[in-house]
Image (cartoon, rainbow, N blue to C red; front, side, top):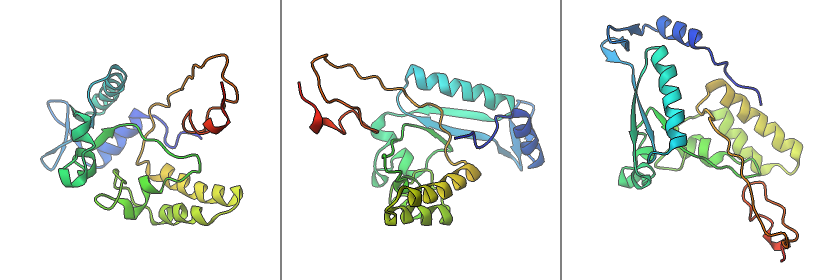
Length: 199
């Protein structure tokens, strides 16, 4: 899939300038006395995540946006809504965490309008009625072509609004004994087809 938006710091600068965000003496933009400082939340520190954060911080500083980065233990970051979890309560401007999806192409728990917390797991609080209709229509499809049509609508809406930016797709490696027979790693986990395995 092609990148929905080109990486263009000059264009980002022009958009912010045009929207009235003015660079201050400290190098951070303000508009109507509001400072452009984003709350960036993520889990406990890891070298991989911290490298990504510092790369984003460097880009943000070039366009005069401040990032207030805060690490949380998973128990606080992903706590339920009723326990004031950071993600479920929306106490962030930018969040960095892993998301898994199923092989069928069902994104409804992540993106439908009726799954915004506390009702569900649409942590980004993104709502597109057109995308929501397509995600629910997916369950009525019996052919790959029908599912592809619904997925195309969802992908078009995601490309338009860009509520999510994928920074990493891990390459999973599986190590197994040479005596293992019938092992074919599944689309999502290594255990999808374990009924066919013998040793």
